[in-house]
Structures are given as structure tokens and as C-alpha cells.
Image (tube, rainbow, N blue to C red):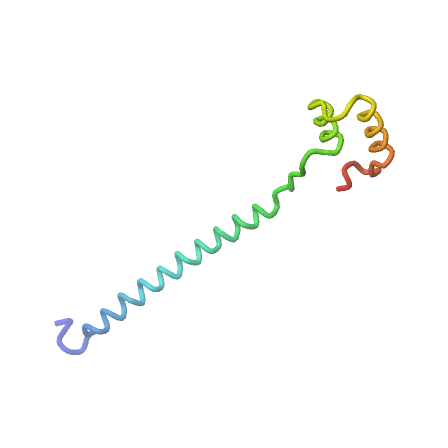
Length: 90
């Protein structure tokens, strides 16, 4: 009785199926986009890791034997005299 000529034809069923698939594809793509955006925003808020300080580099050079004790002492004095007042300049 339902398909006696007044109901939805074959093309209506195809159109309904295609539109349903497109709708759910859009919903899933939207969810993926939101998750990626949130993940990217979380990565942007991570603290920036800086490399070694000048004192650490100087200590490494001294440990390798690139500079002697007198040069190390002079360089440390220069660094302490010219160091920024608030730590590493952050």
C-alpha cells in the first residue's frame, strides 16, 4: 500500500541516503576539526625551553679543557657583571 505511486520513489531514496551520508560526514569532520584546533592551542601554551645558559656553556668549555682556570674565572666575572637584573632576560 505504501508504494502505490504516491510515496517516495527510487530517486527520493537515493537522495535521502546521499544527504544522510553527507550530513554525518560533515558532523565527523567538524568534530575532527575541533579536536585538532584544541590540540594545536594546547601545544601553543607549552613553555618554551631555552638552551643552556652562558654559565653552563662556559662550564662545559672548561670541563672539555678548551679554556683554562684563569680564562674561566675572568669570563664568569664578566658574565656576572653584565647579567640582566631579572634572571635570564625572560
